[in-house]
Image (cartoon, one colour):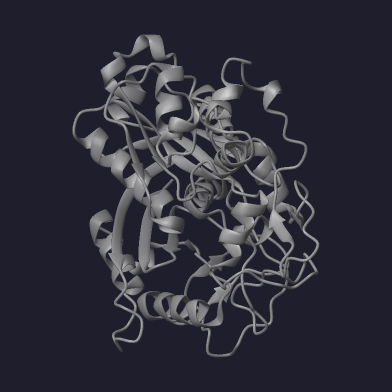
Length: 401
């Protein structure tokens, strides 16, 4: 049996819960704005998808605050939401029967930057003992596991934007191996000056000053993306376990997944994104015609958009399946982007509506049916979510209602 999603937890620039985020997405309310946590004057790009007015003290105990970076605080909040949404009483499970599988690409940037400044300006005796782990990509997995007593196999996947989907797929492997329940997903946050320079180093960040035009994936004027913070954690559960505890709401099933890696740039060999889509469909036992909507990766870079549009058109046929890009409202969230798109897809299937982006002028060679202007009502039973990571990572996930 395919595992089922029974809980959703979302921390996004346009909503601090699954329902807040979903309402904002359907209403096209953006979370992209000028950087707020430091003075961005002098930087070539100054826009990001940011969670405004975030006060961790509202959500977490004072004991946790000194030992966690902002990214881990967001992860803890999203995981807590997901478990509450699934109505999970962890005391009813054996601790080894629950696991945490996360994705994270950038680690605890702000925590580390602060502690390194202490090291340089004051000396090693002023550096927090928590620096030994708060910076690490695996800190989110560890803190969620400790907080909820989940002592089954724990992992962290590092594959940039593709890593979030890969984490969900790894959680599926754990459940097929006998684990009853996994908290799985990913978040990112790295928006102090040091983190921002790291984003800019990719050469892919949009320098457009207008938040409405800075990130226009598949657009004729696409010239980079806007990065964002946040993401989602979900409860993925064996269907037998969910039935046994009388779960009232099942958001959907994880039907199929595949990951591929692109050839070296300049090799002349094509991208393997289309192969990832076909392999995910084969894993789910489905034909392309059964897919009702595609949640695109949407790199916002012309060469990346061109490859993705071509892959979608090649697998499904020109203009054959609706394509949506909800991340245009929040930016690319790296490891948080895939899980957030999965949460969005599950809610879209629940409510039979495909979210839209602002109207985009696409090059004619992009033969995709991009949903623009107004949301589109549709009977959605099967969704494909795509994610591509800098460096050649591709991930494709098939969800079912």
